[in-house]
Amino acid sequence: MKETEVRLNKYVLLAVTMASNFLNPLMGAAVNVALPNIGQEFSMSAVGLSWVSMSFLLASSMFLIPFGKISDSWGRRKMFLYSNVLLMASSLFCAFAFSTETLIVGRSLQGIAAAGIFATSMAIVISAFEPHQRGKMIGLNVMAVYVGLSIAPVLGGVLTSAWGWRSLFYINTGAILLIIIAILTKIKTEWVVPSHAKFDLGGTFIYMISISILMYGFSHLPQPDAILLTILGVVGIIVFVKYELKQANPVLEMKLFFENKLFAYSNLSAFINYAATFAITFVLSLYLQYVKGLSPKEAGLILIAQPVVMAIVASFSGKLSDSKDPRVLASLGMGISAIGLIMLTFINQDTHTIYIIVALLILGFGFGMFSSPNTNSIMSSVEKKHLGLASATVSTMRTTGMMFSMAVAALSIHVFLGDAIISVTNLDAFIASAQTVIICFAVLCIVGIFTSLVGRRKA
Image (tube, rainbow, N blue to C red; front, side):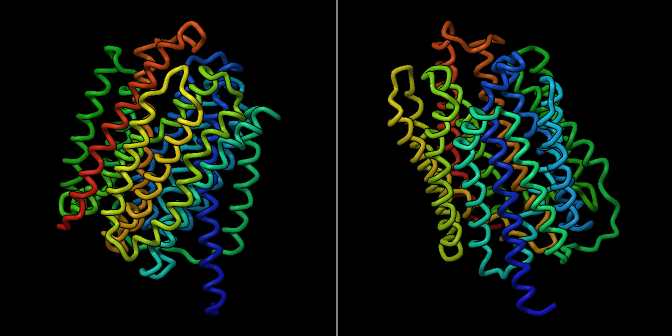
């Protein structure tokens, strides 16, 4: 293959991975804006609505680690391609959903497909480009995520208002088809690390069962059976860690966490950051539409403030992390995010929308300053043979953090509202639940400042 053709295919690869990283958050954030319409059609409670988002995240969390391990030996291109095929099919399935149950099943299938994409996209980009370009390429892919988040509230609001929430899934289906065509016609290189070791089915089973029980149980607290499930989930994760440490070819290389402090604390910081920020869009979308009485389109125009700043800042913070200590940048970003969250703890029925927008701008700046440098730290701290696993691990931190974030939001809403549908009669209770959620997130971000700094101490 000629050098110019190789270079062209590298940038086609970059464009394809950016497109995938653009579409997945676009879909999630757009669905958040459409939740009131979905809830109205299927008569869903606020807790039920949270599962439209959480089913996607739970499925992703379950499959990310196994898919990351499989992609390293089976082929990252194959995993990326087939995952996009499944994502296209599941998006079409969601478009034809006729009940709460079928929509949640469709979102779960989307989550499984997204796990394969998340587990490979960052790894194949890093494999294709030179080490000195790593931060820049990561920054561009992270920027794509935030551009998707930026457009999602407006696009979700416009499409939902004009053609209904199902149009979101139709458009996603068509866009993914174009990505599949680009992969088949332009990307011929396969990234694979030959391995004849037996796949760790036992560890995979323990992990998937434990993480699903933990997240499901936590999201239904404080019910007695949910407390039991949460405890069982924690015990299961402990059993998984001990089991993996004894395996010759574990599905998750636990030694990376115990022997590589940079890898361990950077992943912990990623979990904290996503846990402290993801559900903000969910909470504020409900707040703006139910409390402020805004339409999905109007709510989307306000929520766009945060991801727009994320996209701008992430694009240059990634490049900056190639020359500056990424841990310092990440810690600074976490601190700025905490300021934005603290501002949002004061929202009530009379809060001006300008105040909310300013808080979202600050939160977006902090998140953008954190994400790209932190991802660069994680991907730079491992050998090439572990890139797929590292990509899957940071994505697992992201999705489990998001899941934890949504679980905290669902728990707070359940405590204050029970299974009641949000209405004018319980707006005060909803606002109290929202304030409680945001206070928890602000505390998490403050903790994250220190975990980011500890991560600088390499093993």
